[in-house]
Image (cartoon, rainbow, N blue to C red; front, side, top):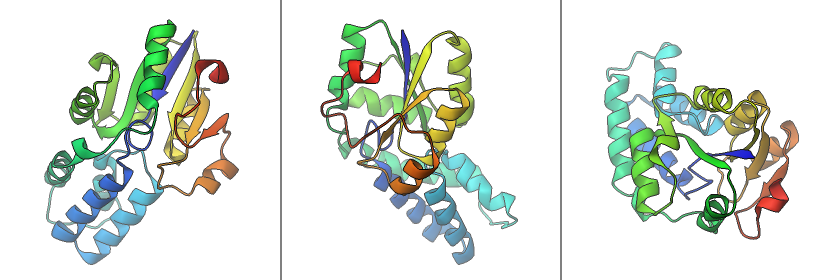
Length: 214
């Protein structure tokens, strides 16, 4: 029996570019030029981490901007909410999820850097049959989420599907197989392949089945 943990952006939905646009929007509207540059560089290097961690980073490095983190997070979420439902699923991910649900006794979880309730709405919009109690996101950190899931199923095998350095680090932490979904990432794929233990690289979910994973 396996536990499957999916990131959302770039793994289930093609929404990585939207998230980058949202950070650009908030940065240009509310932050100084220096803070904007620092935020966007941190975002690109830390895909998979939540907006809370990224906006708090500006405070942590001593750039005391006028706006509170809570306000910037709300503005970011509003930008995302306005168009996130227009973005498609990663090809064949729905079929793959349904194969897990219908043909096995495995568990499915989603551990996202996106806001938890927004992720739940998004997956419901796409009619993905993942129970909302198994969908997690910010403000809880992804690394804390996967550790909790690991503790709940510590005697089972794990597979983590991700597209970022952070996802690879989370997989390593919980001693999980790591499936790198490379087709929709905005990370440097070569750096991930060269610096992390990858069990399989896939562009999308075309042709993937459980037998290949297990």
